[in-house]
Image 1 (cartoon, rainbow, N blue to C red):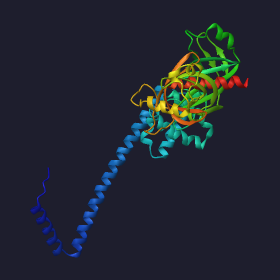
Image 2: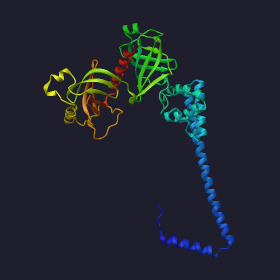
Image 3: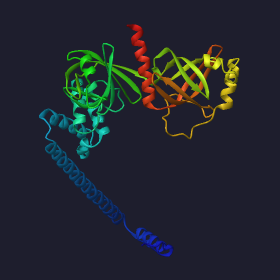
Image 4: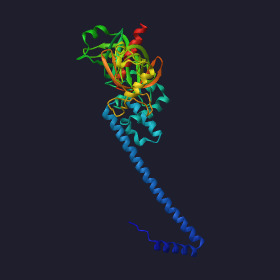
Length: 377
């Protein structure tokens, strides 16, 4: 390990200065030229070494890329798409990483977008190729544009002529979707009577906080599944664009029974307490005004941020907000959640869901959509 020696450094500098002082111009120029040549030679060697390493990395990446193509036995059209992606990477000076196209979903998406910009007709083939490579469905950062992007095991609802079937996507391929109903072991006799081949219905599902719907046609009915054709005409609704519907639901809020008269995926409205005849007959729960209701909430509300069994809703809240326990009776199911008061008036209070299980929120949205559909029919 080198050690700093001040005396030796001073002696070296002094000797160098004496040598320069006594040297001629020719000798000085020769020394500088030799030093420059030495530096150039070192840099040249370094560049050659870097080029050699880069060439080896490119050759290694190409070998791995070709090996993946051979092992996966892709059709010629898919091989050509992969070669096109590899070419775009080489144009971007990233040809030493082309083998990662089989492993890195974000890298695939990045250069797939470049190809799509150059040729929009490649969007569907690239979208179909991605799940074949095991990189998931759809392109990151983009809305779902086709039912071909629905991942397997996604929960879906299919509505036809007033009948609804809930199930999971068992398979998603280029020919269509295969949906397996929740009823075990497969389609029951009633479903076989309600759903016929050729019928068109509405397929609904949720992905990344967005609710989608599309018109699909029944291709076939098997003993344990239903095959649907694909659709690229989708309707999307974000969580913040939840529909609301009028209703008459019973619930318990902060230990008090209430009546919900309007509900959506983001929250609900309840009139001023008391909300139900049962509450009116209960002297200890009877409240005289909205102000009394808010006082009750402030007295009984607790900060339940430590509970981690529920998911944060998309609504944002300040640290000072209080959350209140709420149990909503929806059809034959009780939904437990945490809510906060967002608006209060003479007619009642608006509450937003702060913590609610995604499945429970989906049930509320399903309830709203069914109500809206029934109202239009």
